[in-house]
Image (cartoon, rainbow, N blue to C red; front, side, top):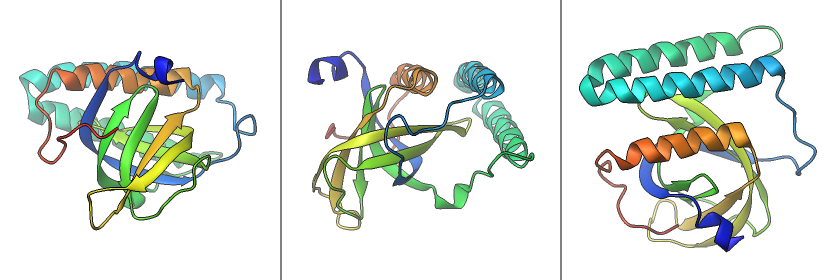
Length: 183
């Protein structure tokens, strides 16, 4: 597992994050064809917005907000669940396509199942992955004293979004407060 994890690039960043209990593997929901298509379109749009961001950050932010607005409106359609962005907290993360490390106010037991929801910047693209806690150790942050390391379940679409984000983010300077590799 460690060998596979090292195949991915890892970045330190600050992202809006929310984590909750996740269902056991195999008990999860399957994406419909329409959901998979929307996820692919979202990934392509995120790529385009990130390219625009290098030349014109204000325009990229506006495009990202429009994309987020469409996502929220789409989630309000019958049969969809509205994304509650009020639960997202800007969090320093160490992120790769195989997993994430982040500070938490609660100690999570090794092996616990968690659902991680992130808003990729600057376009606020929501990504949701389930995974297993590898470790929850004392950290350096007094407000969130535990450093949680989580291994993602296999989800090709979501992991591809994260990998693209990581590669694009590597070309940009790190945000303030996202220094130090602890993952």
